[in-house]
Length: 246
Image 1 (cartoon, rainbow, N blue to C red):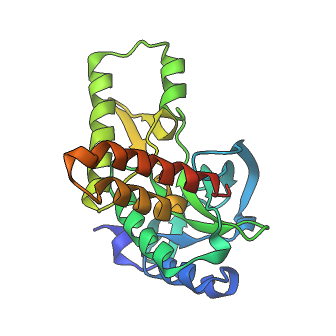
Image 2 (tube, helix red, strand yellow):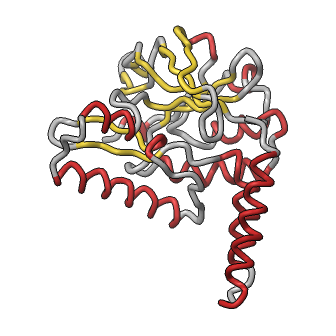
């Protein structure tokens, strides 16, 4: 029996502490996610002032995620304290239903075993909403390769490439694009007998920009116009990027 699916989470504190109906509905309708008050984190430190789409912080979650339901006590047991990543979402004070629809699609991606795990959402003192994500000890692919000094066997390389490919395939099957894939958002963790590589930073705040970019590329399939179409797409992409506040 899967304890995480056998019992629903208590979301009674969301309305009081979240303050946004779109986020309320999103968390309440995703049984495996939690709303965690920001005061349940300590040692919050910024580790990337300007990531691809938003600042990223490390923190210690005091209680940690729910891991098992205690039938006798009728409560969830937790495995904290644990170190986690807090990823701030930009411009979440002006959320639209379109953004909410993208959240649901990205939730489907994160449910895949090929993408970085996350536990729920919180809100910092400045009223910025944040994703609570698993902390990967080896960091991103760049830092992992630096630590290994390039001493990777073929099996390691194949495992990393397979995991990245599987993650991209899942994203595309969901009808989305990543938009900014590089070694900095491939998270790596050594397992007992394998390497676990997960895709992260799937670019939530850029969904409008990406939609326009893809539309510009694909709007006219005539080969004679493809070059001009690509140039137009690049102009749309970078003009939108310049207007985004991180």
